Length: 516
Length: 101
Image 1 (spheres, chains in turn yellow, orange):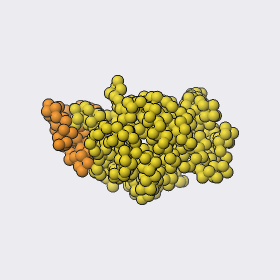
Image 2 (cartoon, chains in turn blue, cyan):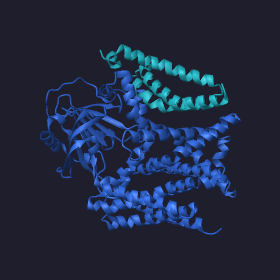
Image 3 (cartoon, rainbow over the protein chains, first blue to last red):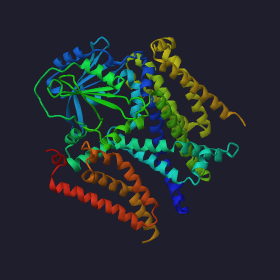
Image 4 (cartoon, helix red, strand yellow):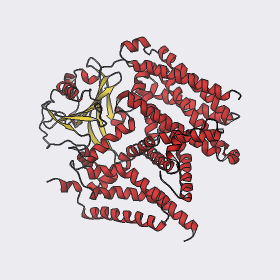
């Protein structure tokens, strides 16, 4: 326990309250979409009806890759990224590195999508922004991730904004810890029969205290990710490399070995992937080929953390001979404290180090963070009850954002399900979100009371959630039997989760509205 | 110094001051931190630590009863790390050149 003087405690309460009030609503939007984005892969499979469970890297694609290398201009042979797209199809991005007009490092080249039979089903010329952006079949999960990462504000401003929100959350978490006079007592204090204000304060305190370490980790890792590329890398590159970003990237991410530009055919990539699967125990999540078609070609396979570990694994192969070279750290050419620290930032932020279990825990703690943010804003308002007339707009805003945002996200999912078969999911998902948001904002202006508005929005969200599973089936999604037969139970699990959550929201809305 | 001036000085150190000092410390750290086994610790550790450095400066500016101590710590860090960066620019010798034989 940390004992502060009375005036310092008072100052920390003010810092805690104002950091929440100034940044709380945007922070809430970032945390709630981040909570959903923990299951981005599963939401992607559920929404698009993906039933394939075999990784694209478990199928042979070496011959197709060689053929693509021959038809792609050698100027795009600097690097090749291999990753899964759609329903376990293989994405192949031949590219070269460039610096754009704004001084940002980008990749430009040719992207191909290989179907399960190894044939090219899509070809596109463009940059990494185009290749890794939203597609028709992943528009929903991509929308969630984009909202979480940058609130749809163009980079670098979006990342800077979410980075500042991360720092605000760090301040709220640390000041929240400092203002607890009786930390351990507060963890278990929930006076159910107390006045509503006191009960709400207890709920905020209990949820906040339990999720305090998680809030700290999320805020720290989140602000790291936001500032890493936008501010950190350019400034450190300026200090250590005279501003040469390419040199710094090479030093931090590059592979060991001397350059040898002599041309040679790429080695047996199928042998590399099968060896990588055997060594790591799981198929790669991403594969990169550096210097495709050269003697010094290097192939790196990236894998999820093995059981019992938190850091992801990457394996390095000689690209020309397909010979295994070493287990490589994600950052740096040899294991180091800094490299390990950076490597664990991602699993700590995304909670993907122990499969669905860690994801479920991260989701639950994310929900607790949303609850803490929302109830914290409400408490701040209730404590200024005498000034409530002038703060009515803020009370309504908190209701519109706090309860309207989940409603708009569910509507975005509904819009996606309707639009995906028509091929217009990228625009319609955003459109559905915006229309639902506008409807809640208008309701927030015209509804007689903020409490009544809250109940109505909760009921509407519950109904929309209940409608999502039948809508998915009506628009051509796989049924429960088909999903289970295809070993894709996550589709069924998400359907059930939506039905339970929708029912609970309607039940809660009715209970709150019932006369006491 | 009046109470109001004190308050604004503290706000300046906790607000823009903490941001500026944290950024300069991040840049300067890359020049004195050990390079580590992979030769990258001095480059990546400042990037990881910068949110914590900022939070440390922010809470120090809020909670230290003596404002002069806040000023000494923040200005000291700024001058030392700013000086290191300035010296590097004057030398025009990139770190990578030292590391490679």
